[in-house]
Length: 445
Image 1 (cartoon, rainbow, N blue to C red):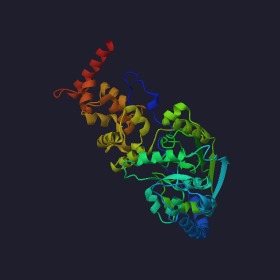
Image 2: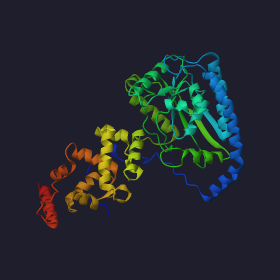
Image 3: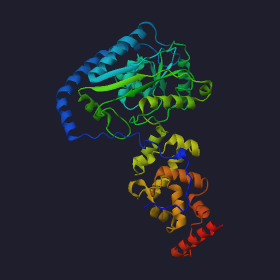
């Protein structure tokens, strides 16, 4: 039974649990019938498709080499023109469509893509798989934002170079500033550069919601055309995120399907208001909301930092889901940095490592504080237990510790502020009676 609160406690609606608890899990379960079907189809489809894909790649690679031959990627870079641009937009795009056709993809395009002068940036969401690159092909090979390491990938590295990507070097401390500056320059080139295609979520999800949009696409303050993606298939063989099937398994399952449908919808461009030009966060939130409405999914404040906390939770022998706190919201409202959150996770793990499911019960809470279970301690526990389920998860823990205890030592503040600490010579039963008497006295006052 969850502990009953001594008096009602108000809760900020903005800190309640999100509509989607874990958008970073792929939980497809294959039935026996589905496995048998995949095996039977795979016997015929996989070899045929493997041969066709190899043939397409054998043609694509030399074409990409010709397009990028002696063409710089760094320094003073100008947009491709003439025959190079023609081969990118026509030949490479055609080869890309052929490649996905050989994979078994059936592409449905809705809406109208506007020109670079009308909307220099394409914002694509949700980002859920490595197959999402198909939107780049269907959009006529716009520029993308890519890690510099991707250029070294065999065959595909040459294809990425054809896109003239905005390169991100994560080891460079100035990389973020330089990336934003380059996006701004291209977005304001008045059509000289192709459109810049960005996945503003910054990481892959399971498409159950739209997580926090990064600001890079919205800082230039230019019109942005939203593009939404759907995979309306009976069996999900595409979602590639932090928990679930690996890339090889997904590729094999996809090859074993008769076809895989993907829908790409170009929504009307969004022109930023003067206020949104000054506040990229507001611009990003408005675009995200319109995309969520088109998709019929909620929005949450999860972000890539939640994934890092999720991995850290696993390293601390906690369930990986324990690290999901909606980092954007919690960090903003409680003024917490990622490193602070990581330290709180370590403290939580020290208490919860022996708890089932990585959640703290009232008995374990009392044992950690070396206190008896009294009405006062139950009320203290209820301050942490925001949803009243009788346990404290990491999200509730970090909110409670930050609000109640920062910056002083946690245990000391708990004992002093709530006066639940027994005197060393006091018997636990006497301590509980004293707490009840004190509570009655405070109620009378």
